[in-house]
Image 1 (cartoon, helix red, strand yellow):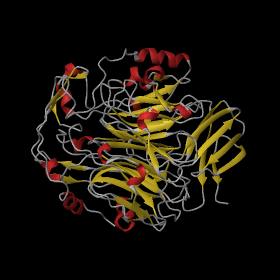
Image 2: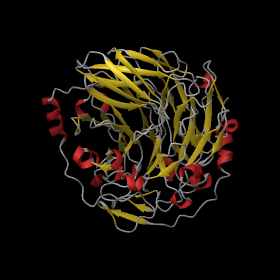
Image 3: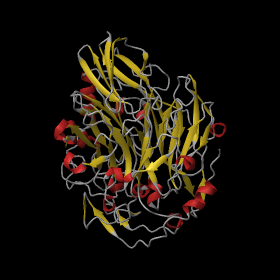
Image 4: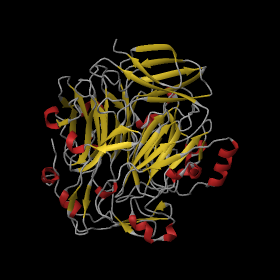
Length: 593
């Protein structure tokens, strides 16, 4: 079923009436000179001491770290998000990407969400979402039209899950306008089923995640939303009311603009969902400008929790009570604010055990002139901001982060961090004294035992490209045991990074198969023991910045070439274990027998 832009534009025009924007605020240096009202969250008053990239590269060289990410020209079609000047806040978000094996042939396919382009006269120009079928050997075919997923809308995010329990992986696509649910028919085609399922949510939605909140096997759905606006506002004559760091006047927001409340849908088990947002325990006044949605069992009680990166508002952490209902504990858990007690401009989020203590930590990307944040999981004591001690603060302060992923780039058993970067204000290019740029390089930070160093400049040509990057998804596109990356960009073609790193380290990739309805084991927590070295990862829907990564779990094993023990905890607490799993191969673990 084709979903045309005209239909969605008409629906969007029926949204909230335009609102006159009269706010004017200014940023000077690294602080706000007036109360935050029409801009992003304030940045620290003093920039951190910068560690030179040369020092990091010297440390990497001495440690024998040699990584290679090669850019592959695989997806030529550009993605668009508004006009070139980005004069309305809707135009800065960009769109996500999903890596999924939609046809179950063992190869990861790529689904890229597209937005709507605006001409100089601010007339909408439709572009379609794209599904690339993986043919093997780094060859891809655009099958969007034949598959029925070539929606023409103002797209935003995407997440994957088998919502109806038929064993096929479905896609939920968030939009400015009506969200779309593409039901996988199992024959290489999809049918749009949002209205039938009760998921045709309107407004401006961003991140999403399927999760089994109550342990009944049916995948529920969390959808983050950003703010309330209308097509009339978007297409109106631009009004730049924010002075950025004494340089250009730029678009206003999100502070001072009305946030839109997130939505939680409970899966009723018959292909239908019911809005149960009240289960989140949020009050109407607590709505925020939401972006990245991250689902994981952060307190290891067997129930999936929800973290949401909010832009210029306190982040959310919904702790699962064990019955599908939640308590919002962001402030008391230490993840609502940074170490300065300040809400940051959160964009994307990822979870990984960076310090090897068996607990999942949280990395969040933030605005320019404000560092990305790493929250260390303290167990029952909540989280602490360790951005400075871990090296993130000094290495991520100047750039503006979006997509983020923990992944083991060199398979040494320590999760590294990748950040997709890009500014939202093209006008900064006209003010060289600001030392900022709209197009930015991405970053690869290597984990050196709980401390990170920036090795981007020595990690191959794939890390040298300048674009205004947004969505990020990680997965093994060529099944060689090394994790590759796909990054979307504003008004440009996606970047595909092939991991060509050669080390003597070993690995194992685990694919779990569960009983239906949750056949892909989404929400499962997986722990391995490789010769006494223990690791944890989880299978999750969504995450990063409005994107979807590989549902297979890739573990680096370092020098360990022997057998591995595996323990799996499913949502609700059921435990399964395997002993003697072989290394250096793809392994399917069946929990459906």
